[in-house]
Amino acid sequence: MDRPPRRTDPRRRPRWYRQVGRRGWTAFAAAWGGYVLDGFDFVLITLVLTEVRAEFGLDAVQAASLVSAAFVSRWLGGMLLGALGDRYGRRAAMTASILLFSLGTLACGLAGSYGALYAARLVVGLGMAGEYSASATYVMESWPERMRGRASGFLISGYSIGTVLAAQVYSQVVPALGWRWMFYLGVLPALFALWMRRALPEAEDWEEAIAETAARPNPFRPLFTRPLRNAPAAYSPAGNAPDAPRPAGTGRGSSRGPDAPRPVEVFSAGRAALHLGLAAGAFGALLVLFTGRAGDAAWPLALFAAGALGTLAVRLGSPGHRVLYLALTVTVFAGFLYTWPIQALLPTYLKTELHYTAGQVRDVLFWAGFGTAAGCVLAGFTGDRFGPARAYALTLTASLAFVFPVFAVHDDLLLLGVLLFLLQATSFGISGLLPRYLGSHLPVERRASGLGFVYNVGALGGAVAPLLGARLAEGRPLGQSLAVLTFGLSLLVVLLIGLDVPGRLHRLADRDPS
Image (cartoon, rainbow, N blue to C red; front, side, top):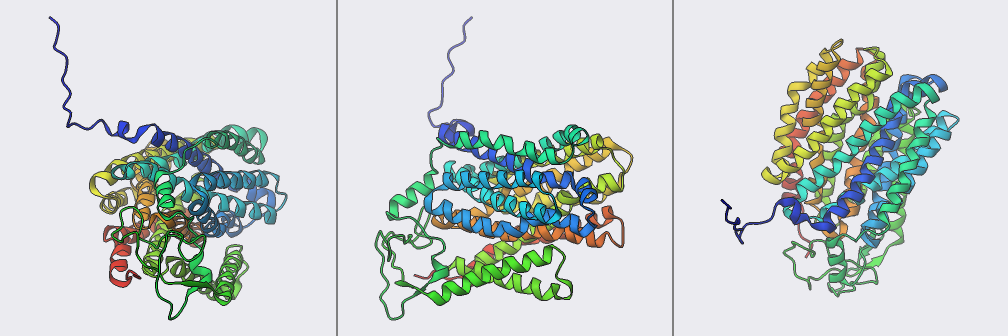
């Protein structure tokens, strides 16, 4: 007996993956591929750290500084490439970022000294910063707004897949050919990513914002202009200059109208010189600090760098977003501090304290990497269901149950792998929601530059983390140091994100300049 045809309820929505559409999935595939390459290239140094240390005769702090080097330059790359993405489109910034970190990876393989390798890692950091801000912004602006938690989580999973691939290649290549070949191979897939991105459509939100204003944004405007006193506020589609953007908050989802006034601004040579000096000074101070040359001046240099970067964050936020930019930066900094002790020093811990072979390290990192990927996917669904802040805080709280057990296991490879899978899924994996959490606080016309600066200045926590872990390990076992850092800093991030401290401070302190 034939069944009658199933009737479709016209009110029923198609499944979520059909609502994304071809354009959204094309954008995701290209950006996700870039993230895989990003993870592969960036984690290479952590895998070969013991080999590099032996060849160049480095101490523990110098070796850890090679991991930190990419973070020293990330804030600059995030700001520059993020501004490129806001002004000329997300695609241009994505392509430039891949070229940068691919060239940096090749230079790592060719480096003949510690200094050359450190410089190459700075270039990798510049490119990685742009990849994060441009790709994350591009994908989220290409997906429906109600699904951007999934876009964020799924995208970040590409990074962890890249780390897994790097671990697999490490076990085969390094014993046979040496550590330099890891970096040579890391360049090749970039050619595919560049080819794939050449015909991508532009992000819809960015196109709409540009169409509304009939002008391209200039996110650096607050750094070299000042309001003209006693001048009436005005706004036109072209702004007060050919490249003037619509004021923050006038894009999609804003309560401000299209004719909202803005103050007349003029170029200020003094303000431009001040901010260029702060940027140069911050870069120089970080370079001295993370190469271990600061000596007794370490604390003054650290305070200067923090003050300079904090000032730039406040200026880039401009009236209406100053406290927000600063609070988001601190939150990301704490987030990197809790994740990167394990990310950066886990291979070293496995090889030096547990005396694992290259094959065993590969197997453990396989579990950890796929735990992170699974956590990112889970974060996408939970973020859309419960909201990014609540999902982040609850999942990260659950991760605390696995921190100390991970470092209590020594001889049971399977148990260690399972515990690392669970820890990474609930701690590092949930950070897949960071692009969604940060992007939801930022206006469209400054989203790529804002996300790039806030995230990558905060990423300096990743530079501090391995050095802090190495310092603590000088007086106690490395595993114990990593466990204490991860547990304590996870609690801090639970409070910052769970209570939405940046959002609360923004509502209390910032005022709409109109």
